[in-house]
Length: 71
Image: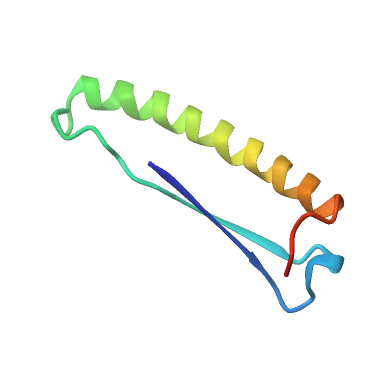
């Protein structure tokens, strides 16, 4: 599971003072800790997480640029 929190700093949206916080929750309880399967799933999960972070940042920047975010 991925949660995103968008917040605005003291300078405000007009100054681009936007913070984006991500939280990721591991959801593979059936995977044995320390196993080769865990290592494989973590590599895949982290790669996907990086894509999600970069994609979300681009969307948030575009929304701010278009004036669609309210602070």
